[in-house]
Length: 268
Image (cartoon, rainbow, N blue to C red; front, side, top):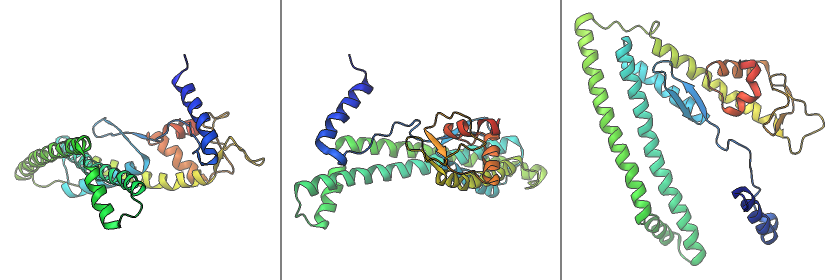
């Protein structure tokens, strides 16, 4: 009995005879989606999200810390919950919109193929109507209910935090000090590092090529393990600033699994 992988390869081979060069190339490099695993020092929770989203998450968290000015571990815990719920609520809203738009795009292509002379106005209305069928509307509705639960949780946590903050100010005054706030310091440090990491990744991407077709002058970087299992090589040395950024990001668990492979020795 063939394995699923062999069945897939056989199907691709058969399709190639029909489609020729029009068949997209299968990319088997893993992991297909790069994820960061950031350990939140305020809660001990591991945060998993794509690299670009992590930078945005930390930036938003820094702004919320500045706005709510928590004092003490309990207020910091409440504010961290506000940060997380607010982020999940924004993500649910984006997911709902992206999901519906993808359905509209799919139905638009299907309708246009069946009715080439259809007008743009009719195509838009028809594709939107077709996108919201029974099965899809159930999925969109579940996302909406999830968002409503998050909104209720956010209101409750905000109310608890505000009551706690008012009681603390009534008893001891507002002793918030940005220079000693551990939550602010952590978010400020990680947000700045995440921004520098985006630039470092752009340099790494520009200097990386596939191992399937290496150039004669390609040499592995000093920071990479040898041999590397990533099916890629770096054609020219990275700048010291970029290497330092990856090293610091490794110490703070901001690297993806692939980057850990490349910079394991430097980040250890």
